[in-house]
Length: 357
Image (tube, rainbow, N blue to C red; front, side, top):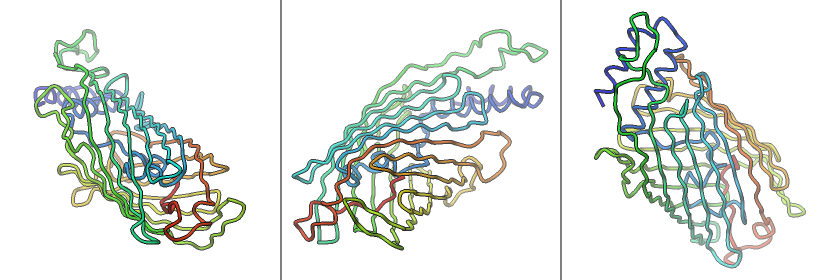
């Protein structure tokens, strides 16, 4: 990797301080390229994690609805040319007369200017049962297939520059940038009541090889999710549930030496949900890319959910990467009669109290 980074750093020092916009683009491209070659980049995280809960923990499959379909789009690093985009899609179905649920996921990542590209699909299964009258457990598993391809598009190397600083020729640098495919395994478990939940999930447990080099593996990542819903007011009428509530949530992620903490508080006044949160790296110096603040707004009406989220770095940065914008659209079918009109062990399931967004 050093052979790639040294000419990148040299060109940045030599030329780009004089042209700020190119310097920003160069640094961003170098970051994308170096992450994709090493295959050490962390998992893609949504600003609306519970809207994409099947990516958060496979045990969430079937816990909020009878069935649902969700799609989302995020534009990241919008202060740079091209930006970085991510698309999510998922679906789930809970079988009516038993405790099983199945689901499917799709995700794609694209770097600026046609650089690094990643596609991953997954099939999920979850089983839910009651431990006590007011305590449920769900366990889930996902088998995924992915492919990714790095690219040197948008990067400028030393041998491309003329004495006056213009770019006139293609680089002589050679790279092994073939597309690679891999299988990945994820598992998760959730304990929950009608107000509290705690979950643990693990991704890439089979340590899949995601590149040509021997060190190009996706390390297992582990995540803890928890939260508690405080009801100010709630009632059920005409197969419809109304509430005023507050939900503080915490998510802690660990992958190799990487640690990440997301803290968000949600406020729901049916049909509107609002939230504000922060992202930090515990035990390390929090860089502008990692220390962020985010806000979200969502509306639910007759099973249709529309949400928007905004994330921005807390600190100033020499590279103006810009904020992130995320949109989500979902349709779900919820039968509240099964939740509120039955009791005890005859009740089909308790709906988990996590946020809708």
